[in-house]
Image: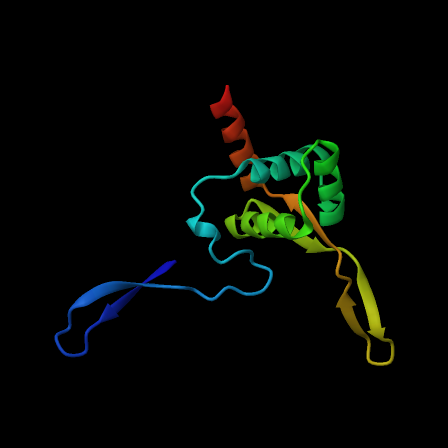
Length: 132
């Protein structure tokens, strides 16, 4: 939540008001900055991305299942969105499709690839250090 400085038009008193900043599509969960502690699933996702590199959500879910952590697609999407909002992961579209050759219109193919950011690596290392 952002703070906005407001001035009363009558008395001139200045004060701060909490306002929700609108988030654009692709910026992650809007409530992510309010998350104080990462869940075990957040940590598992970061660990897999750090160890195995960028991958699609489907592949990430399959690896988590191999490790004995079954998670639904909606739950995985939610956790990835939260991590994206915290800046710990990033999402990139790797394939482009030509929609109309005459006008040269292109669209991203809906197969985003998720990867861990440097901030995510630092956070993961800090969590591992605390467990020692």
